[in-house]
Image 1: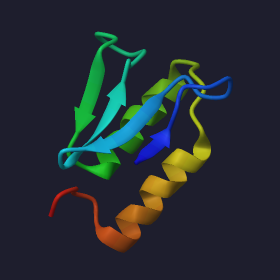
Image 2: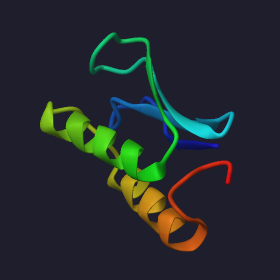
Image 3: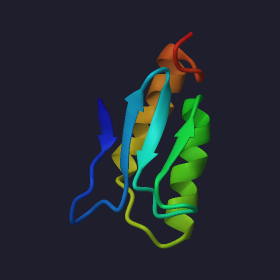
Image 4: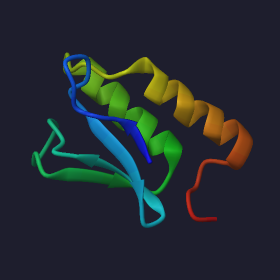
Length: 77
């Protein structure tokens, strides 16, 4: 399930995979991918993208916050 996909309004592609979250083709760091095990970690990562001037759909961040409230922070637990 994708939280955000590359588009005119999004510089990030974030999805859930194997008990974690992936920022594929990440524009921060190595440019390959960034993986997190917790939703809050991905929120911080997406906020770093915003700080770098990248387009990040705010609904992706809101969806992660909602999931934390309903399902908890850690994935796969």
